[in-house]
Each structure stands twice: as structure tokens, then as C-alpha cells.
Length: 349
Image 1 (tube, helix red, strand yellow):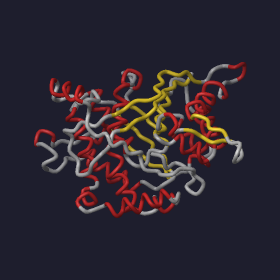
Image 2: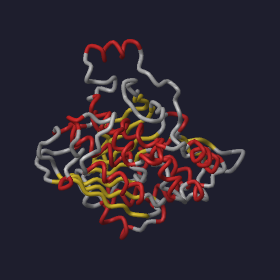
Image 3: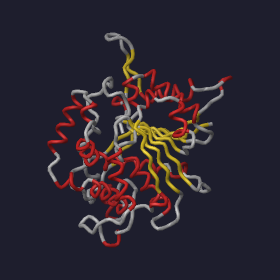
Image 4: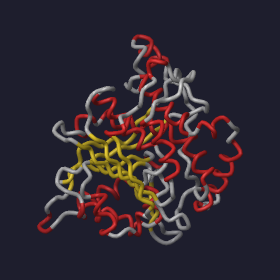
């Protein structure tokens, strides 16, 4: 999530995901859904998407059973004032944020993982080690758990999912709340049919460790046990915020990732598309805007090259603008929004 930054110096107008008011798929997409009632416009099984939403509904049932609108307004006000310490400094804010914005993000991330399936999990791997940088609010964790069900099917033997989530805000309470409905038998509710009353993921196949850490001040020593074992490193809706905080420190972080990762490691970057992800450089009045994607590619594909110009990364896939559109048949106590994003996947050479 976009909170792995120095709150006091971050440059942004809001930390909440941008709201896109189009909430239903197009008529053509809805016609396709009618022909295939168990598949959504995103190409994901509808029942799996509903199970993902059920995780958040169960994890934050008390918050969702009450009116959390006042809490959300307070969070938005703190974000508008760029007071990120206040916005993410108390448990009720963190839970309200995760209940409101993480579910649609999780579904969007699941779409990303679905599209990258052929690149992500080597069949010979007994474990799948993921480093989620800025992954505290739960969306990445639930999406990754969902991807195991998507790739291997429910009830089948899967690789062990070992997630190392890093964030500057202390999301440990949120992650703990999410872990229980992920690994335990869910209660019978109108949102969960009797045939779906089984753990979302087997406890023996799932492990999450949270690191309360500022990525921009983290040393190589602190990052090594997180980065070096990882098969996949994710930076989802976080990199542009890091750049907005400090370009120099963010470039240094990318160099740390380069030096600590091993051959074959994948780096997945997802962020807002186009003009929403730009970084201002230079003095006021003469400053210039640079696309986040350009800075990222310049760093990984050019600046990170070794002696003799040896490349350290190769670009596997790059998408400038992709939509994830929610299926109107999904059920959740709050209205959720579609997600638009850019996506870039790199492989360490």
C-alpha cells in the first residue's frame, strides 16, 4: 500500500485509492458474463472473487456492522492535510481503511497475478517466497493467497506461501485480523454458502511475517533477509509515493533491491497510470515532471548495470494502463470501485 514512506515529507493530496465511479461492467461485458455465469469481466472465477471479499467482511465484521463513515472522513481529512502519522496512527483508522479500500485492491491485484501466472510460480518450487514492500494493509496478502487457489485449485497440494510484508505504518493488527479468516473455517452467513465453508487456504501452506520498517531508511543488512530469499518482490501502489518523498532515497532502495536479489527474482511494480504517477524535480518555478515509469526503467535497465554495462534486469511485461472492473454480482457491505493501474514486471539477470 502507498504508506511506505516518510509521512511528514510525503508529497500527495490523498493516500486513499483514487475513486472511479464506474462500478458496473459494460453491456458487452455483462453479456459475456451471462454466457459464462461463473466468470467475471476480469476473467477471474466469480466465486473466488466473492471469497476474497468474504475474507475482509469477516476480518472487519465489527467495523462493517457499524457506521464507519465518520472514521473514513477523519482519515480523508488527515490525508488531505498530509498528516500521515495521524491518518495511520491508530487501530480504528487502520481497520476502517483496510475494510474500505483493501478489498477492491485485493481483487485488482488478483487480476494482475492471474495475467502473470505463467511467469510467477516455477512448478518445481516447494515454497513461494514473496517480499511485499509497502504491503501492510492486507490487499497483497489476500490476493497472493487467492492466487494459490486460482493457480492450483482448492483442496490440492500447493507450494507454501511465505510472505514478508514491509511497511512504515504498523499494520500488524490488520494482518492478524486477516489471517484468521484466511486459515480458519468461516462462519455460516448470507455471504458464504455452505459449500464454501472451508478455509480459504491451508494453514500449513501459508505464513506471513510483518516488518514495521521505513523502506527509505532501511539498510542492506535489514533488507537482506527479506529481499534475497524472495522469488517475487512486489511494490504495489507504493513506488510513486516513495519517489514523491525522496527520489534519491528511492533510487537507493532500488539499488539495494538490485544488489540483494538473486538471478531469476521477479520484481512487480503496480501503480496509478499516466499523469497520476509523476515526480517533480528541480526548484520551484523551474521544476520538471518525470513519469514514474521512466525513472524506474532508467534506474533498473540503465543505472543499475554493472561493470562493463552488464544488464542487471530485463523487462518481462509492461502495461501503461489497465482497468480492473468489478462484477456487479459481487456482494460486500460497502460500495467498492474499479481500479485503473500501470503494471511492470522485471526479472533479475
